[in-house]
Amino acid sequence: MNETKMRVILQNSILIAITLICLPFIVEAQESNGLAPEITDLNAADVSYALEKNIPDLKKPFISTSPENLNDGIPVGTLGVDGGDKASIVKFAKEIAAGQHGEIDSLLLYHHGKLLFESYYRRGRINYPHYQMSITKSYTALAIGRAIQSGYLTMADLDKPVVSFLKDLDQSKLVPGATSITLAEAMNMKSGIRIKTNVIRKLMQKPDTLTGQRQVQAYLEHSAPIPETNRTFKYQSSDPSLTMQVLEAVVPGSAREFIKTELLDKLGITNFAWQEDVSGLPKSAAGSSMRSRDMIKWGMLVRNGGKWQGKQLIPQAFVKQATARIHTNRQQTSYGYFWWRHDMQVGKNTYDCKSGRGAGGQFILILPELDLIAVITAHHRGMGSTLKSTPDHILPAFIKP
Image 1: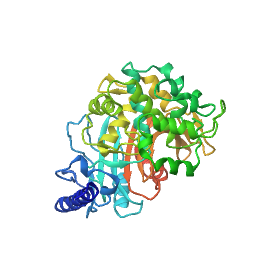
Image 2: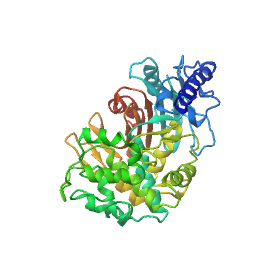
Image 3: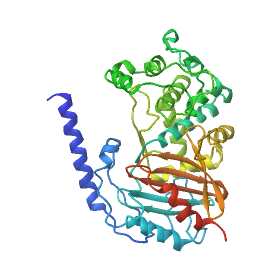
Image 4: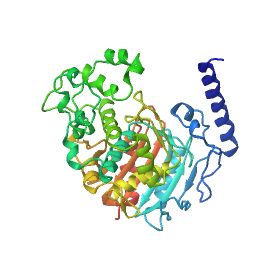
């Protein structure tokens, strides 16, 4: 039996196993302070975007206004007692369960230093790492911040050309302007790289030619000439790929090992997945999978200026820059280093929101003025209505009259 057939059989076996495992553990709950629904016997091989589609929907939602203390670094409290309007949030949760707000899988709310609300719907499980699209970029930026805090980069290095870190590139073959792209520009989606779709398709037909730094070589060799100044913003996968390559080049060992030991392990994130890019490095544009509670931890890290349990994991100056309004579009939505920034309006008032976002509906929403972090996971076809429903249904519950 050849390797391809073996892989297909193994994948089908995993799909069947997940379905069988999930069925006995479907939790029937309305408003409950009991145990959140889980998938048991979970292995890293079971976590992927494709396999996630086979998780059966919960028959009834799990809605907790007093989340369980799991000793996972997230303090817990009780909604209504420690803040927030319980009735309005529970009403919103029941609307989610009824399908009025799309295919939402989880909603968690962290307020005044405590997790006050935890809920799971449809495919949502407390221990299943939900596939993350572009929010993976946000995690990649924080990995660069961790490298700075660890001494492998400096804040000044952000303004250095990407090629200065990548010693395996053949700079003689790069298009004009390629050698001037800085790390900061790459993380702000202003590298200026522009590659035609048909060229990308042709390159991807030979993935073995894109391993290691040859991925960046291809980007910078096949791009249209890159302007030296006034580069325009373009949301694309090349820029986070450049960023991950720099991380790989400067840290000891590999970028994958560094992210795990110096960031995820520090945050107590052990149940996760992170796919491999064609380069052999961790994917950076999309491809990570995180539990909803662990997404709260990422939010806490940013909210606390890079501190985790009193220790500075990421420089405060980097967090400030990463979430700054470096580029602002016509809709008044801003972009920093793979993190978004915009104002949410409630009545006549606006509230500053820093966010990590992913297609399908993965969100970490941080609202400093309300000391609120909201985490949402979903499997919408697009982004869903989260950015609209949050100021309409969540924020008013935490705004003092």
